[in-house]
Amino acid sequence: MVEVDQRGRIDLGVSFGKIYVNGVRFDRLQRMISSALRNRINLVGSELDITLAYSRLVRINITGDVTNPGTYTMPAVNTVFNALVAAGGPSKTGSLRYIELIRDGKKHADFDVYEFLNNPNKNHYLRDGGYLLW
Image (cartoon, rainbow, N blue to C red; front, side, top):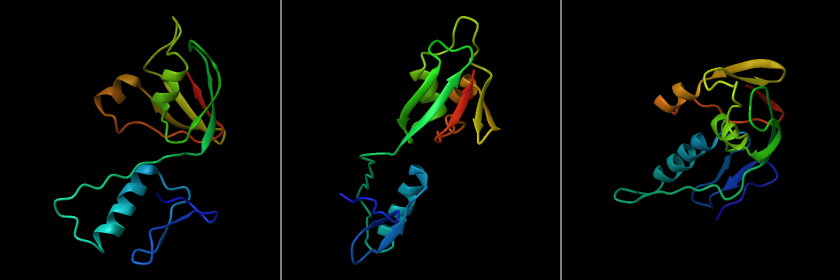
C-alpha cells in the first residue's frame, strides 16, 4: 500500500521513485503509475490493479427540480451522475436532459443523462464547492 505524502507525492520505492499526484484525476493517475512500473519491469502476462482506498471529500450543492436538493459531501472520485443519484433523481417536473454544472461561479458544462448513458465518457468529476442546477 502506498500513501500520498504531505507534498502530494507517492513513493514507489528506490527503483521507481516518487510521482507527484496532487490534483491528478484517478484515471490519469492509473496510467501514470502503470507507465512508471512498465518502464522498469516486464509486466507481460501480468495484470496491474490500482485501487484508491481513500479519496478526499468534496461538498457539492444540488438545487432545482430534484427530489432531495441540498449540500452533499462525497468522495472526489464521484461524478455528476453519482451526485444526481445521491439526490434521488429529478422531481416530477425535473428533467434528465438539462443539468448545469457550475464551478467557480461560472457554467462549466451541461449534463444530459441520456447522452451519458450512450457515452459514459461524457461525465464530469466533482470539485469542492460546485453546483448542479437541475
